[in-house]
Amino acid sequence: AQSVTQLGSHVSVSEGALVLLRCNYSSSVPPYLFWYVQYPNQGLQLLLKYTTGATLVKGINGFEAEFKKSETSFHLTKPSAHMSDAAEYFCAVTPNSGNTPLVFGKGTRLSVIA
Amino acid sequence: KAGVTQTPRYLIKTRGQQVTLSCSPISGHRSVSWYQQTPGQGLQFLFEYFSETQRNKGNFPGRFSGRQFSNSRSEMNVSTLELGDSALYLCASSFSGNYNEQFFGPGTRLTVL
Image (cartoon, rainbow over all chains, first blue to last red; front, side, top):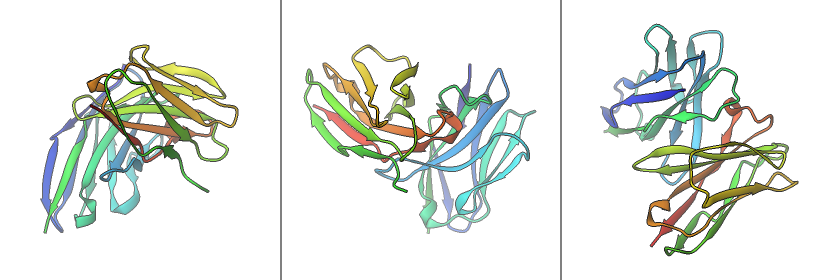
């Protein structure tokens, strides 16, 4: 079985500051890992995903995440926050077969302060 | 190529009624999955259809059902609505049915009064 824990339901950063959203997962098999973003009244947009290969994954809008197997983590970072990054972010996991539905974390709401 | 579309976008129903939500996948996609999003439970998987067959099902009561048509469009139905069914219902489509290749629609916001 898989599970995802996102530390911090709400994170607030200043514009231009580093964004760090934490995600830890539990999986009995090698995982595929995802970060999605959700803007108000919209669906989920894929930011990035780790399937195989390089453990540092670059996504859209300047975000990246690093898969650390030893720490069972997949934290999302962005060097410099922009006002438009304010949204809800979800981490998700599925076994690396890709044949099992995604299990999502509870989400982290990111606020960006001017 | 058009994205995943969901209709209606907003819906208000009363307890005891039933509701049908619709999802049109990206052209050529054969798999449609449905998720329920609530503030308390977060995002939870409802079920997935591939080529008109239900392949996976989440842990929801039988009041929640779905189907898929030959053109891959999918509907989900909730009967005997309860207040707790108020949620954002998201559908996602993929070509191969692989969950790591899903594209999500904008969702239908259901409010049960």
